[in-house]
Image 1 (spheres, protein in one colour):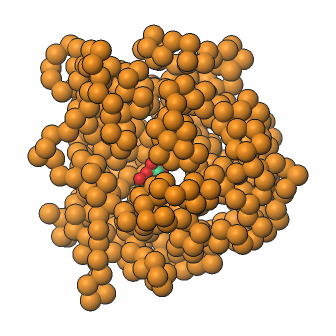
Image 2 (cartoon, rainbow, N blue to C red; image 1 turned 180 degrees about the vertical axis):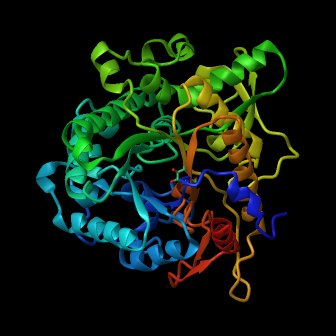
Image 3 (cartoon, rainbow, N blue to C red; image 1 turned 60 degrees about the horizontal axis):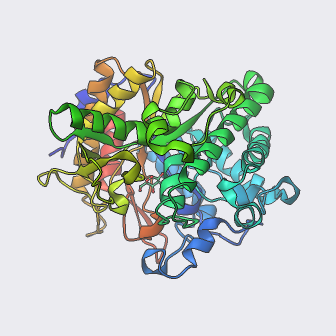
Length: 466
Ligand code: GAL
C-alpha cells in the first residue's frame, strides 16, 4: 500500500528525468466534424455495428478540442513537465493528402502547443496514433499501399514546418504492432482486417513511413530546430514458463516477434532471424536502400508497456491466443502464453507484474546497446467512482508506485531510462472497449465533461514535489 508518497522514490530518478502524462487525438478530442477535420478510419470503424463496446465512438470523447486549456492547467497543477499528445492527420489534411490542407487544424494544435509552453509543459507530439484519414483507406488501401509512406512523410513535413519552432520532441508512429496485428491481423481495431499476411506488409510500410518522416526532419529541420525524433513501440514482458531451454527460447522468440519486429530494423538493420524463418515469404525483405533509411532512425527508444505473460514452447499444436493476449500471430510464433492466477489483474484483465517492466527495460538495453529510453505509456484501467468528490483509486496508486520502483531499479542496474509518461492524463475513449475502461489519473464524467483529479493525480503531485 502506498497511501503516502515515499520521498525516496523520486530521488532515485535523475534530476533531468522527464515526467509526463499522455493521451491521443481520437481518444480525447471529440469535435469530430468541427474545424475542418475529415473522417478517419476510427470514425468508420465505430459506426460499424458490433465493433466497439456499446456502439460508442470518439465523436465527443473528452471534448479536449474545446477544453484543452483546462486540461493543460490540470497537468501544470500536478507538476508534470511534459504532455504527450497526438495530431490527427485528418485535421491537418482532411483527406490525407496535401491538397486538402486545413489551416483550422494547424491553428488548433498551435494553440494547444502555446498553451502547454505558457504553462511550463513541454509538448511531445506523436504524428500517428491510429486515426488514418478514411480517404487514404478507401482510395489506396491505407497502410497496405506502397504509396502510404510518402504521404505520411508529406504530412509530417507540414507538421514540422508549422510546429517545429516550438516542438522539440517528436514521435513518428505509436505502436506499429497494434496497427499491424489488431488492425490487420485480428481485425479488432480499425480498419478491421483479418489476415495472416497483411500485418507483415503493414508493419513494413509503417517502418518506412517512420524512416521517411525522420529523413525529412533530419534533412530540413533538425539542425535548425534542435529537436529529437523517434518511434514508440509497445511490448509486454515474456517470462519463460519453465527453466527449460525450449521455454527460454520461446520467451526470447516472443519478444523478438513483438518488439524486435520493429526495433531490430531500426537498431540492427534487419528483421529478427526467427521471424524470417517462421514467416517465410509473407515477411517483406528489407532492401539495402531501406536498411539505410531505417538503421539509426530513432534518436530515442519510445516504449509503451503494460503487462507480462509467461511464454512456453508450443510445438505444432499452438493455441490461437485471445485477442487481448497480445500474442500476435501466435501460429507463426509456436508459443503458448499464460499468466499466474495469483497475479492481480486490471480491468483490461492485464496482469500487474512490475518486475516484468524492469526485465523488459534490461532486455532492450542489452539488445540495442543501451539506448536512451522513454516510457511513453504505462498505466492501468480500473473502474473508479467518485464518492463525495473523491476518487480513491488506490489500486492505480499501487500500480504506479510499484512500476516506478522497478524503473528506478532498472536505472540503478544501468538502463538509460530518461522519462516516464503516465497513461493516461484522463479517462477517455479506450478504442474497442469504448468508455468502459478508465485509464485516467483524472476522472471524466462523460455526460457533463467534468474532470476530477483522482487520488493517483494527487499522488503524482506529491511525488513530483519530493
Ligand atoms: C496503448 C495505446 C493507447 C491506450 C493504451 C491502453 O496500446 O497506445 O492509445 O489505449 O494502450 O489500452
